[in-house]
Image 1: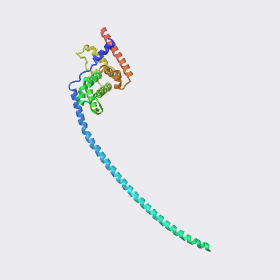
Image 2 (image 1 turned 135 degrees about the vertical axis):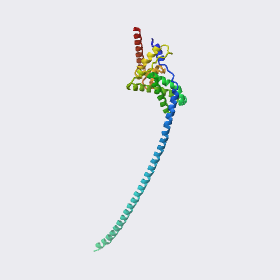
Image 3 (image 1 turned 90 degrees about the vertical axis):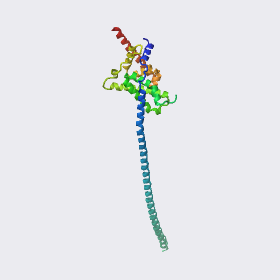
Image 4 (image 1 turned 30 degrees about the horizontal axis):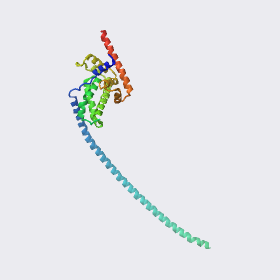
Length: 113
Length: 168
């Protein structure tokens, strides 16, 4: 048997065969059943996804509100501190001005002696 | 390239090809039927990525080949009767030389998984070595050399059997 003849025999031995009766219908039925099974969880998953998104948004909004509140409190506190500082500075400036005035008045008197 | 037929049409058009690959690779109708179903169910799940009928055919052929190789390896390492032991008698009354055909199929069934698949793709699916290489993601030179070695091995086995028969 030469090479060509051997290859022809191989083709004959391995030739394609017909699929068994009913195989296609069985495959289609299984695919439909599988699609049906996976469809439900997808709906549930969609609900879960929307629920998670809503919870995330609620948590996000709450977080933002808390942050703004905290920021506002800090600003009020800072303003109070600034006002106290300004008041303290004003008092100090006034006192300093009084002392300086006294000094200016006293010095020419001493030179005059 | 063409439009994509429905899943049902794809099953009807290509079930023979997938079943032929799995049957010749595994040598057992029941296992081949199960694997054919698995291959099509996998196609159904991946249908969104399939662009045309040609794409579907190539996808099915590649998946059938890879899944058959995996199944041969899996069954080989599993305890219990091997595939060769449970293989159905493959003598077909319509064949011109049923004994020779059965011997050839038996010899193919005794090949290592990949060599078996290369032989099926070359002689059943009538694929060129470069097509097989592209489909199985292998270098063309490797496909050619493995096919050459396999043919030599199969011819040697056949000649040996013929000699044994002659001396009886």
